[in-house]
Image (cartoon, rainbow, N blue to C red; front, side, top):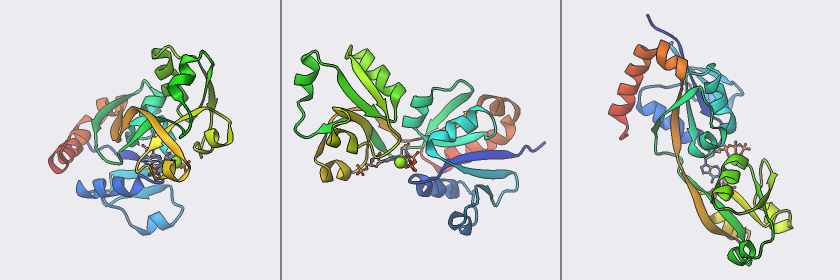
Length: 215
Ligand code: PRT
Ligand code: MG
């Protein structure tokens, strides 16, 4: 018996690479969908649907089982730490890194040795809290949702924890990378129940994944 499958993809910057990857395993949808505001997309396989959601929400849709599979950055996956999904494989696309960043004239080591409380702004509060706890560094955490780079420039925080790809944003804003705390690339995730109840269909898809992508 064939079961329908829903795949959750991130809108935005990693969509292009993700679509190429799906194309390489034989899943296609009409390009005109991307120019529209459609959020549920039919594919060339009548048993596979795509939903387009915000990068940060992909694991949530998969966790609740409304999407069977999802493609999402390791940054988002680690931040959520959800229980109803399995991490299947590293797709090795959309690579970047999550790093501690400061103004170029900020003396990080001196500051953390001074006993003053470090003020950290980030979108990744769980990863950040865990990291500084493991280093025994006391912090004040401020949650922001975007344009993090502005925070140390304007004096809202001493540092930020944010993603870096080319490093251009840092360069243009007189910021520097102090330390990388997580290497990021896109991951294939699956809902636990889907794996149980749609196993045959999923196995056939994984086979194609394995054959076509160097995993
Ligand atoms: O941006 P928006 O608020 O709409 O949504 P979002 O941030 O939830 O999603 P989106 O589309 O930005 O995609 C985020 C996902 O893309 C992340 O979860 C990562 O897995 C992946 N990714 C890969 C990146 C980058 N590279 C990246 N460089 N996400 C964000 N950036 C940002 C970074 O935050 C910084 O502001 O790009 C800037 C730095 O880029 P460089 O090249 O100047 O270093
Ligand atoms: Mg973004």
